[in-house]
Length: 438
Image 1: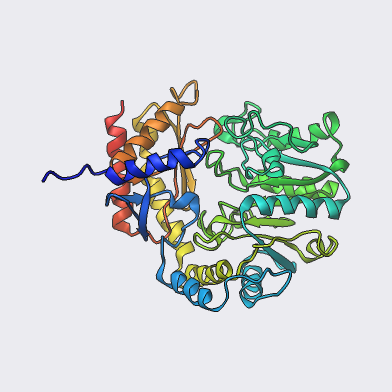
Image 2: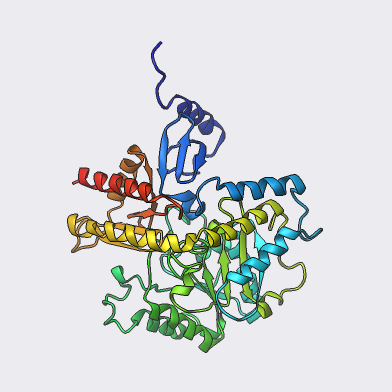
């Protein structure tokens, strides 16, 4: 009997998928997972893939970490769900204490839990409006904050995220981000004198009064928008502007939090403390959980019942979150993210010199982006080349993901405990793919 094709079950399931699941749900790889362990994914036909996507920066401690699995199992045997607004449960309370303990800064903070990053963003909008008694919001170019209507209004990417879905919530203003490779004001750092910050001041004279802005929502390091790392002066300049005009500074650390950039939170790179911090993704290593943390005085302001969530802070998800923080600390995975990220970035920087279509390789910790361009002079985004690289990596057994408003960034997000051997194997695949593309 002849062997079955390697993708027979995948093809069978894809037919069922096409019949029953909306086509508007995109798929980058076409892989259908059966099981996963650590940094490896095995599909339903037994093919194995090294995972440098980590579910878009979610399974930072690797898939099915045994301690986190046990925490989930133990809690599942005790209590699935109560709804915290009806009956409180211990994992929610213990996790809030843990998150408060690892957040930077000495100002007392309080934390609430929700299900997704977008839901946490929506609730952050409520808090900034209640605290400031203002309505308008601001967020930067290239930022991504989610797909619900408030979060999508803050997001700066039209296609495919926003096209045809208008109108969004009003009074959201776009500010420049310090994307130094593509300076929004045509200057070069450090000789620019932070002209992008001065543009924000100009906006207050021409588009919206500073006294109307409730909050500035910003990723301290942009993820989905292309792994963009601003200079320290930019983030500090935003803090100064917010302090000057009574605006709340909200850090969206959905992707960067819990060690992704080589610090527990990306804000530590800039030594700037926000008024609110939004967290998700790596918080519970794959369980649906997000958090909104802020200065206690802000978090206590809304009327009782004005914020909440039926499933938010589910006890099983919170048990996973408690275990995740324990694993990060005991296994020193944040330090591993910093060390392994530096090693990967040092190797990948070689691509800038060897290929004219590589404009810039940049990253912090295990959050790395390769920007593809038509040529180094024009810097014209090269979306098709990024797609070709991602496709070829998958063919060769490595999962990487796409990023950037124009889709021209190859993004690399491995789990923090990926072995040194697997790091090198993944890098070898990347270099082989680039060598095969001229």
